[in-house]
Structures are given as C-alpha cells and as structure tokens.
Length: 290
Image (cartoon, rainbow, N blue to C red; front, side, top):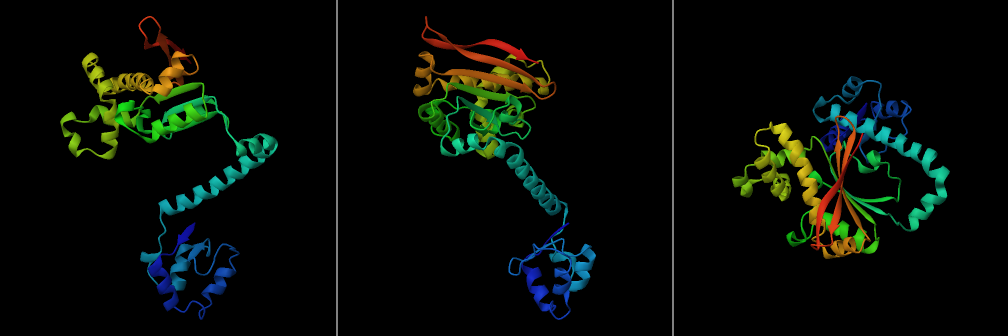
C-alpha cells in the first residue's frame, strides 16, 4: 500500500512532534529503505493505514490513499520488473545489436498507427527494435500537405528523406474511438468542438462517403465502414507530399493500408498502386490475413 503525504500533511506531522513520540523510529523499524526526509514519501511504513493515522494524530483528509495512487504504485513496481526482465531476457543476450542501435537506426518501415492502447503496431505486427519508425495519433490520420505541418507529417518527412524507409503503413483498427467521435460529430458545430473533434474532422470526407453509401446500416456498422474509408484517404493523402509521391513513382517507396479487426484478430491489407497510363494512383491488392 502506498502512502503519499501532501504539503499540509508535512506541516501537521511536524506539529505532532514525530520525533518525541518515536513515530519516526517506528517507521525505520518497519524495514523500509525508501523513506527519505525532505521528500515526504512514506511507502509501506506501517503495517496498516489506520496505525499511521493514529500515530500522527491527524485525520485521513491529508493522507492521499486511494485506489488510483495504490494502482499507480503497483504499476510502477510492475513496470520496473518488466524493464528488468527485458534487460535480462532480451537486451543482454543481444547486447551487440542493442549497442549498434544506440549509435544509429536504419528502419525499412514507417508506421502511422492509432494512439489506441489496444493496437500497438510493434506488438501486433511483430516489429523488433530498430525495424519500424512509428508515429501514432488519434484515428491514425494523415492530412494532405496543403493542411500544413503536424507531428505526423514531420515524422514522415524524417522517415522518408533522412532514414529512407522503403515502406509506409497506415494502420487502423475496428472499434476506433476517434472514428466514432467523427461519426457522432455534428458538422455545423465545428467552432465549438473539442480538440479531439477538431482533429478527427480531418477525416470528414470518409465520413460523408460512408453516410452516403451506408445510411441504411446501424451506427456501429457505419463506423466500421468509415474506419476503412479513412485509412484509404490517409493512404491517398500520403502522395500529396512530393517527397513521397516521387519516390512511389520511382518504386523506391511502397505504401500500404492495414485494418486490424480486434474482434477476430484478422488484418485486412491494401496497397497503393501507380497508374502509369494516367499518371495517378489507386488503392488495390486487397488481402485478408486471418
């Protein structure tokens, strides 16, 4: 159990003459080596929280003990164990590889994924450290070049022009909260929208196409359709950047769209093809991996 003392607590503790009633001595005798004077940290100092309250002679008001703090502490402990496990089981056995990565990276793949915690591209697609340069945003959107700079296209520029990646993947997924927000949003309320709503409105064209073609479907079914349409739009938006479009035409870069279905763990994939006769591009080569 984690106990965190706030500023008011520190003043009250001082007022209760901790040293004179030997409370500090008892804290030391609990075996904790994490308590440090001046930091106001008390982690597992006493066997029970009620003992702490009784010892200090103050109310629980200033002792910020709740599920959130305890979960935070437990997670940090778990995160430490995960890191040490990574170091022991992966880093040290492949130390030469990781030391080489410390000097430079040369990924062959750029992934634009969704910020959704359930859809980690490296985990789902099995990328190892150094293999994929990744940027994630709400609803995995790529805006066209004329919309101006974003963190996504700045990462794209670095990946393509400096790292010289050979493949760009736009990876979306089912049950996307960003697309649901897009589909729910009332177009006439754009000036009063939240940051999330204003961002996902970059997918407005996919939304309008979906509503036009799928008005007879349920809201959830329309969302599934819009999720895929949005990926296709982002794929097409990539070639509005001259340093991407030119490389695609020369065959130096390939662009792919992927749709990960959380329900059945299947992956639908498209590829952007070049129409040399009309000097254009189109989405083709649909595959489903299941």
